[in-house]
Length: 571
Ligand SMILES: [Zn+2]
Image 1 (tube, rainbow, N blue to C red):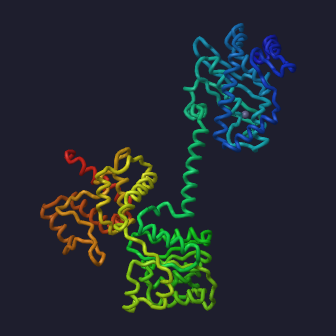
Image 2 (image 1 turned 30 degrees about the vertical axis):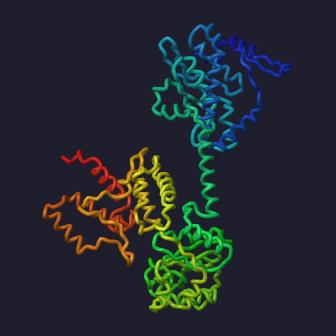
Image 3 (image 1 turned 45 degrees about the vertical axis):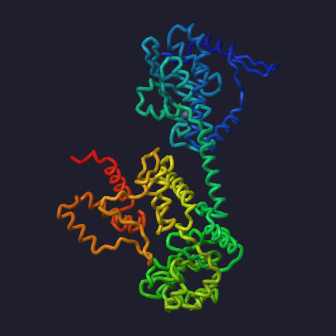
């Protein structure tokens, strides 16, 4: 049996005769379609650039669609010829001939069943001199899968238009993946197991839209960064006391003086310290923060000043301290009042000599560090009591910046709360409409003993609990009470939180066992107590309960839902 592509030379000539060069008008025509004669090499560079800029997957989709469009056009072009054809096979073969005539690839049918009446198609073709496969291999080396994407797109477009139903082709061999030739198989889309992937590739995606989205994201991030070099975005506030503190900080940032930040827990001392660093000439160097109250006394010296291998049992490797790590930058010593006396003496020496000796080392290292210390304690009183060295105190206390508590910044609460809402809604990927008026009032009337940190945690909880698209209500912010008396946030004179109770655990057990409350209620109370004790900090509360933060968030949400729908009781 003779190969179909060798037959019908008259038709082949017919097609060729339809090709007209019209250099006078600057046009090339194939029948009534305008064509282009382009350099294969130029076309290959375009293909390469598409892959380089968009990535292999996107480029693949784009090239498939380009080929598909070309196949569709050729199906139109072929129609008058195929109408004159003796049978469906002959009619179909106009397409492969056009593909060859256009200089893309030589097509030889290996197996071809076409019956337009029965809507049946199955085709297998040999591709030789494949333009695309060769260039791909030339430019990118051997690929792990077939690469003649434009050509496959063409075959799909042409055959689908010819058959009036989606026909999908795949390359089973390809020179681009190291085979000696390309071979393709085409059949109706339903016959392919992985049709979905190809359908996806054939659907155009708006890269422009994605780019615009990314661009606006970059702009937003950039503005956040720019704000950082002035005052951090979180340092929101127009109240006089806050503005005064900011002015003091900005003035200090122009020089290199050591700064002592004073303020209650949660007022944002670390934020101030970081802002000072970011506004200073040291901003490119490291900012290192140490919470002196959070490090065990026996480890604080090695933490701050570093340690040489073997300095003490357990010192298995030499390690730089925070001073060395902050070299050239700023070292923030939070809760400085908690520093043990021995470490205070050593710190004073480092500040005087401007050099640090690691534990177990005789060798002093020069360090250039700006010290920002912070305390919520009355440091002067500590000095009087003998708990803090007076010489170190005077050294650290060169420039004081008192940071006001949140209750003295009433007019800033709304702006801060809104800021946190935006932040946590973004983190949770939740769209919220804002605070209800009642919630706003509750925020304003709260005492905020935990200051900004407490506000932050409460708003975070509100964002977790509020349903998507809804308003944040007062119940989302403050836990509804399940017990007879809600534990109030009321700071006592020594800063501790009330209410004072004898032995709540004992009482709880008695209440459950005596049938006074259910286990669910006990759990709710326990969670509530933990959240209160952690001053609204969910991570800390979760630690108290020995569960993870997501577990706690889940339980809070469940509790809240149970509270909101009392009718939906358990069976
Ligand atoms: Zn190929």
